[in-house]
Length: 339
Image: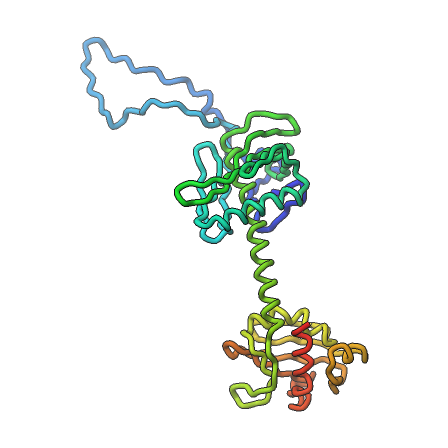
């Protein structure tokens, strides 16, 4: 499933049923024919006048009204699942297919609301009406391999508050197929309410991860770096930060020092890189004397020491560099981390 305004996210990939035919309807419809639709209606059984039938209530079919689709109109695709990407949130889908996201904290609900508004603006979606707690959107367009035509939908997005909970509700209010407005089926109403909800949830999750990355980068900039020894007593550079935190900065940190990354393996703690000494302006800018390291390929070895990380360097032959070279490299690392 892709959104015409480039709302393409792997976390929102819509699973469709495979089919040998390229006809989109074959992905939505049951296999075989629909002759059962031609079955004559049942008639009440008439017992002979002199018979005394005994009826079992176990087999009585209760009366009722069926409002769903029949035959080719029955959509056999698996229902959409709401992505649980907002921590602590609970979701409800009512009989009308409307989706409500409930949170315990108002600030989180406000953030989800602001995320939805930002997403609408970024995707150039028209706003028909807007108040403090309600937004009526213009048309979204949806294109899918398992749909015959381009689909469109409009939504009400609403903020709610009830029983010390704070809600965010999405309701599909208009529907069109091939640019023609038409009544929406119950299946599509629920399906595309959930898809819209997932777009907001995915964007919220993306914002959280980007914020976490920014915070991690700030932590990395405050890492003390000095010479020390590893658990074997060998000289190494010590970075006073957890291994995973330092690893996130390496793709940015090492190239800034003149290393071109060639291979990385986080589980083994190795980075293979080719070194070319920066020019004089680099050393003047960071205020550190140039390191006497010859150009060539080196391997950085990172060790997890709990709340610290050890750093060692070997040459192309696998031989550790001299302790003095490590000592000269430590202030360079410290200067680049702080930038």
